[in-house]
Amino acid sequence: MTIPGGDVKGSGKAAAKKAKAPKEKNGKNRHLHAVIMAGGRGTRFWPVSRETFPKQFLRIFGEKTLLQGTIDRLDGELPPDNFTVVTTVNQAELVRWQTRDVIPAQNVITEPMGRNTAPAIALAAFKKRKADKNALLLVLPSDHYVRDTAAFISAIRAAVPFAEAGKLVTFGIVPTRPETGYGYIKAGKARGKGVFRVERFVEKPGIEKAREFVTEGSYLWNSGIFLFSARTVIEEIKKHMPALYKAFAGIEKHLGTAREQKAIEDAYGLIEEDSIDYGVLEKSKRVCVVRSDFGWSDIGSWNALEDVTGADHGGNVVLGNSVNIEPEGSIIFSSGRLLATIGLRGMAVVDTHDATLICPRDRVQEVKKLVEKLKQEGKGEYLLPSVEERPWGHFSLLEKGPGYQIKHICLKPKARLSLQMHNHRSEHWIVVSGMAKVQRGDEIFRVNKNESTYIPVAVKHRLENPGLIPLKIIEIQSGEYLGEDDIIRFDDVYGRETGR
Image (cartoon, rainbow, N blue to C red; front, side, top):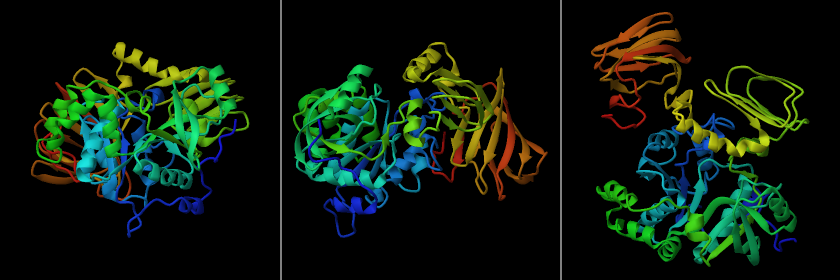
């Protein structure tokens, strides 16, 4: 079966210009707001993705993280004030420093806890409607990949008139293979060129059903990207999720005031976890879908790498430092040290500094179960990455024991840490390469390669790299408590909160 009207797609800038949305004199649609969901845990991308540093904050393809890429592909389409990121309190700091150059800090909406997409979208909708009664919300996951930006923009512009007319618009991706890891949308009667009424949503199917969907032709992958007016989605939440509506309607008067965060915390104590798909879209009569082809992947499992990078002549995806003999149909990924394989067939091997995943490719969707097992067994590798990025550079944990831990710290040229203090630990710094500028109490001095210095407990200090090459140090921490939350900041150039 062939869907009439064709796909909404593009072949460069000309295609993107063809589908025009109403714009202001400055070339931007001031009512269109991007609402980026950045609170996910990325468990199926373990061991690279960890709960405290999930995949939206990782540089998997190129120099930008997936979150930064999500923002970047809308560059020029929206003014900076029209970007909003919704995240949890645990990830808010990561969001702020990765977006500080493009999004105002006040546009980071912080949830006290993750409650899936319905509460996050409801919160954003109430806030945006209060500021702009005609607000259109383009809801985007922060951890997806889009190959063809022009076609992506074209699909959005095609959807805008439908959202303005009170429709809940989804973006369905033309399937390229039978896929059991995605939900599907069945497109019904055409509403316009490339836009259709949604006949039904389908859960992730088995392989035989997925093959039927691809052959039939009217089924599309559910991308999890939506466009609707704040007014419309609030009306539909009121109709289909009355408890959620009541919770946020009760705090609406506090949005934009000093009581906002406390009101949000109170509301989240009253609501249940639910997705916007289950809670609203599958029940609403106002849903339509844009049939899209812009090279999309949700990077939802290790198999998705092939969508982005392609495979070699043997059907392999090989990334990082590895040497391989006669692999076939395998994913081989190393984040640093040498990975060597012989005769792999249909396997996924992912190696990081502190954990290695080995499984058949047809079982990579089960990595989420593996992460749950790690939690149950109290293994910290589900939680913390071996290399943690910061605005100033990164650090990795080399060794940990009773009352001590050893870290390797790398500062970018001209970068510096916050002026800080620790109540429970002392630190010994050894410079491996570069030159360090150290503030310790009232002293300011330099530490050269192969030299060291000591920071006592409860003494204000700051580490800085004044040079043009990365500063690398070994930090030996000693004390009764060594958690990252034992940091009291007094001054920070990256805008992170002081006092903790």
